[in-house]
Length: 223
Image 1 (cartoon, rainbow, N blue to C red):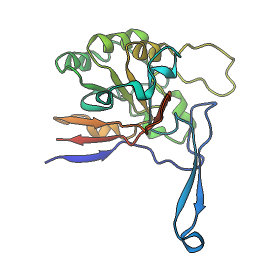
Image 2: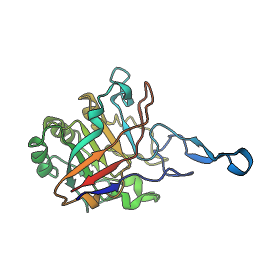
Image 3: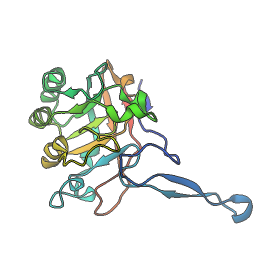
């Protein structure tokens, strides 16, 4: 028997977004009593809610969303249990060593970083998530993974509004995307997958030609 688990945050007006990204608005466009059908109007960015980043997100020369193989968005997954860390903690190669060994033994598997930070969704603390060091990102690539998903706003540190301007460079993004990889962010409830015998994950994005990324309905099948 398998259980299907939704790993996606709801898309609603005013939901949290990465600082500077378009705000999300969802409103009725047509109503059945007056128009014969119900239709919603959506205003959102390509990185809104649970979404994937294509390499093009950080470099114009790298593949766009529709240039990636569908295999990047689904498959067996390895879950790294890195819960319980303090705010803004680095996720180092040492912390990921059990998951790295499992990835090396499972070619093509996706990596899920279960930080537990989705518990802070909708609060100010959500900006203070753990982040993946460039060295750890390189180790993930070396272990064969090309898709990394996290239950946080980003795999890199997120600046707070009002912080001094800085070029953070998104180093973990650049390591993963530079290898032709996909990053999925803002997943929720990954702690439900910890300890599962088998996990399959599905992260299929909207078909947006030439895009940097797109929202997804992230789903896991757990056996």
